[in-house]
View 1 (cartoon, rainbow, N blue to C red):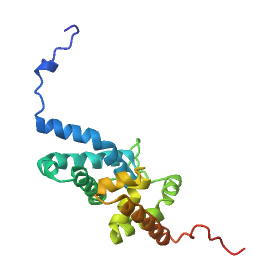
View 2: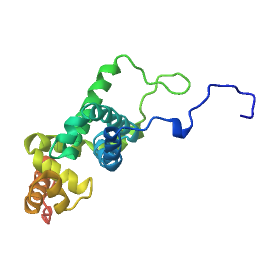
View 3: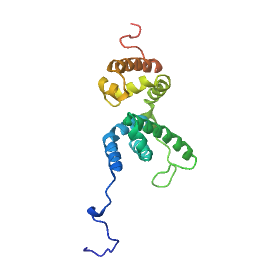
Length: 195
């Protein structure tokens, strides 16, 4: 080594322990599905950093339960359920920590969100509330709508992912959108006001 810093000897790449087959399968699985997990987390949390943290927490749980996930008939669906749970728990964890943490700016002063930041989030409230209600009342419809419009999947991909027929996927999307419109109290397509 050239330079004045003397530190511990670092392992050469060929000296590093090789991952086991189980670890490699898990790594390959995460690489293949991470974008999908992130899309779901971002659609709920609306913040890239929070979504990444929620997915990382879910990934740790997936790693612990990898043998169960691998043996499941639909491993991506089971892993996605773990991501959704992590996203829900993310809010709960934040609420528990809220009384112990104080938001401060770089000068160490208490930071209150600006009006612009609050107004930016205003448009999502009705949609988020409607999606949450639809998820409670008709989870299959909510999932089909989410896969179609947030993940840009077609009916065949949705059907394969959920283990249903493409026609069932199309029907669930239709009724899910209709329910969302009703829950958000939007006017029906093609029906204008008084003329």
